[in-house]
Image (cartoon, rainbow, N blue to C red; front, side, top):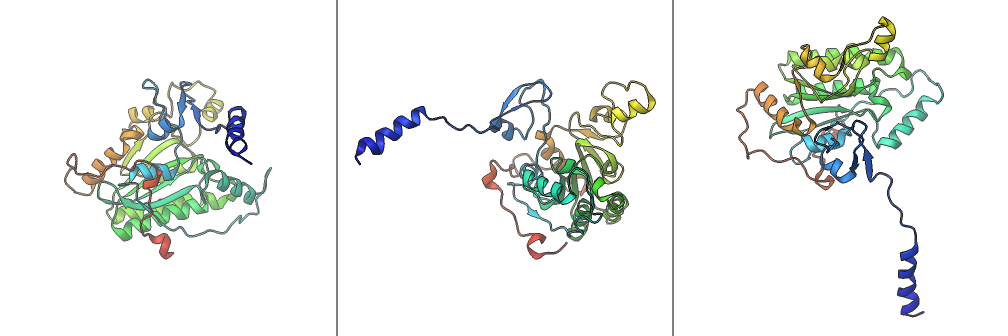
Length: 314
């Protein structure tokens, strides 16, 4: 063995060997067709970088919280575990198999993540749904998660911010999933009786039983641009009434024009807007430019603060 076999041959082989290129380097914008480089898309919070488009692509709850909380630091709030597969439901797949596939694809336990931390140096409890996890559907776990978020907000005397994204109730849990509608509604009422602000941010899409319960009960209703917000979707309505619906029907801007929303806010401006609204609702003075910490830059800045998840409290 000499320098020829140790160095020259591997170098020559590397020149002619096929390099493996990750499949997720580029994402095509579903709205305008622009090819988006993954780093630019991540830095822009999954918003299309084409100035004339700015379509909002799905974003995971963890990435959303990283951009929302001061320094990207937050602690997870523990959620009570419900009974697994209570109906022994099976369609083309068994319900537990669908759950395992969703957990593997998203890296999350369920469709909602609850966290607490500071936003603009103000303690806030936040919950976010993950549409990538079985369409963000509301089952017993999501119901427990929202109740846990409300209880933690009351315990800490903190505002609650919820980012809704769901296809509705989870059919694999039947009536038990529909039961989460009154449960979560009562939880929000508990929050309001405590005199604490509740802000709901509606993202694309927010539909079904989620829209008919906690998603439309906020003191302030905010939506991301062009988000579909409805109970029954436009295709179902058109097939029922046999008429063509107006342009943009059930989209965020349409709902804003008809008084169903307070704001439509770009994701990149959401943190600043929430800081302003939360301080106003909490009776705090307006934030002074330059005094608030910037959101995190890069995944390395995420560090979970001590939380109920470590103590096992609900």
